[in-house]
Image (cartoon, rainbow, N blue to C red; front, side, top):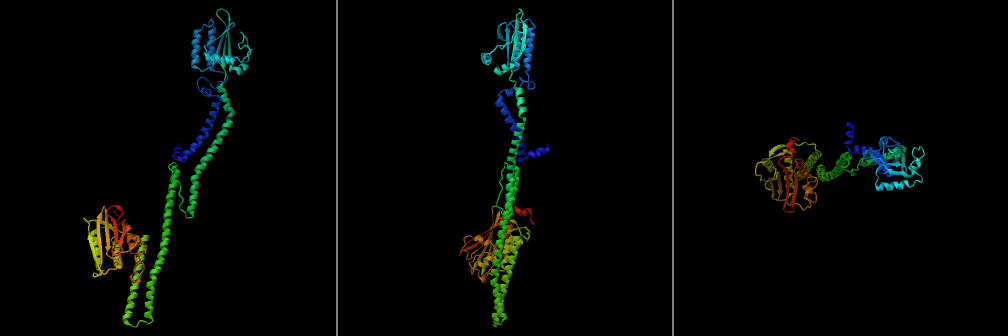
Length: 512
């Protein structure tokens, strides 16, 4: 029982169970419809008290009527004077739906023992008018009446003839006619004769319904198979239909669709990573080719003795060292960016006072800048002391990259760099703005992409790795923050960082 309940909990189980039930219900319904068309309302009375479906030869109620009439004939009967008998017969006719006709005869005078309506009289006259001979047998007659002809022409049969003498000694007879349609017998006969056809119809309908249900239930699995074939060749675009009408199939389709979406996203990432790798190799080759060519030319000139002047030799040597330092810086930047993107370096978050932390970093950076050319200003607009979770080493690298970026590309004799921090609606906003030459660019945020730099051509005397802002973006994203760029040619260049002040990933797992 529990196993049946578990099967019926899902829509597929209900479909199978419903198919099984329909294979029985539909043939029975069709068979009942045929019986109703053939016998009409009589089929209903078969199952009521008026008929006994197991008694094929007659009806129990007529026997009771016969008994009452026999008792009356034994008690000095009088012609048409039998009120007590009438009352008893009326009760019997009310309790049973017997279609009977009772005729009383005394000599040549014939009357109905039970009262008839005008409609019944008309029907009887129409039915018995088909007979050519006297239908009432003589007193004491036996086997002189042909019930077969009577049944065929009127639908009635003579069930019983009761002969007796009235109180005045005259001969009398009572004839009991019944409407011998015998519907129960016919119904049972039809069922018996057609049981084979019923079985064949039942099996045929069961086969058709089963075929339909199997085809319908197999459709989701065929769709799943076709989708899997597409996934096998790395085409993750097909999606399966999700419908609340089919809960069990919907669960499978939903899981497959989620898997396909994840695989498609992974595939797109792989394609982007492959494109980035190719771009990476191409740009590294380009960025290293120029300084290496310069180093080789300077080194060959010194080796071949082409540089005889000591001052010029020292200048060549300094150029070589400068190029070597630039290459070393580029390699370090590439290594860091690769580790950040792949996720090899874990972050360690700690709670710091944001205002004091930025002030310490900028004081340290100020010592590395030429005070005559660059002025670094800090503006703390926080209304109160605010603590925030940061990876102090990683975030320091962000500030270093942003300040160095302003110094490298500011191209002003007197460069002004302003660092401003303030809070707004649960977030800390840090602005790094310089009064450099800015950029003319449609979408400045493209500068956050690796190997992208603002200048139109890569000046070998002012070259960078093109990774400074990309590294800053990667670190800010790990802090669940955001970074944006605003610039105007000839006026300013500004980077804005937004960091959450509370909640988020850091408070749940500071040491991640």
